[in-house]
Length: 266
DNA sequence: TAGGCCATCTGGTCCT
DNA sequence: AGGACCAGATGGCCTA
Image (cartoon, rainbow, N blue to C red; front, side, top):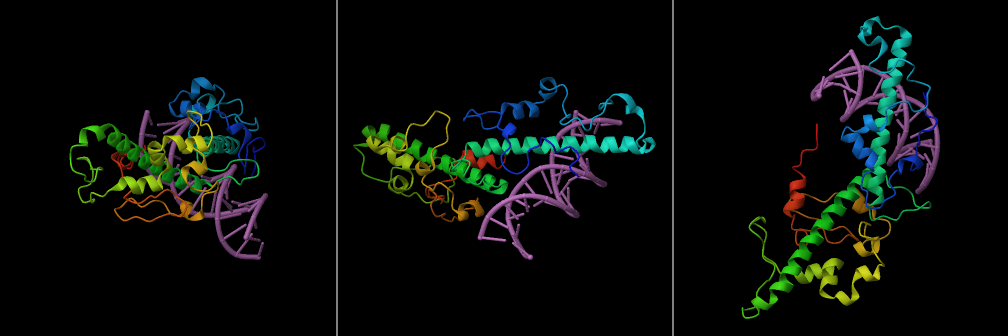
């Protein structure tokens, strides 16, 4: 074991994995290029990490035509090393993408903070996306209400947040706005722009993730948030410290619902 | 010391 | 045939 793990990063965040320090770069451009098939041009001598393997006979050259059964023990060993190296690189790319995901997560980051585990990162990311989608929906409704208020003044008061045709018909038509304003700082901030949480939380760069406080949960996500993924069904649960994930404030917008049907490849 | 998390190796399967 | 992807196995490191 450890045939060539000299410069590979194990454990904590690898220094050379944080390729893209740009906060908005969800995945590094390197990874994206790799998965768009551009890496061959980007890195001609790929899979030669530490020089202990990948001898002079690269993949596709030399003994390519030989049957695998005819390979000598050394050739098999070399083949095995090449495969191992590729697999290692693949996992490193995966970890790099995971680091990119961690960078944009509303989670306290720093040398003194333990890195999010992979499973925690994925769970938190999912909840984060759902929460942002929920906030966006509420924001849209709020904007619609603000700009449509003048036209609706002559009409009798009624719940203003009506569902669109695409919404699930079984969901009750509830006055969500007050509840949403109490639960979502984003929605509340639009109503009271003078005391916007964005201003309270400091300047936000265009692509930087919102601060944890702005998002409404603690600097370190509660364990329950990480352990419990948001249910996709009609039933819901509340996460302590998490901006309400329930169906009231999170009407499962079609944008997120469609995410689950996206082809994930292979 | 047990358990969690991780990196790595390895063999199988599928795709190009 | 070679590479990508996947999952199981294994062993190391760290923390409670």
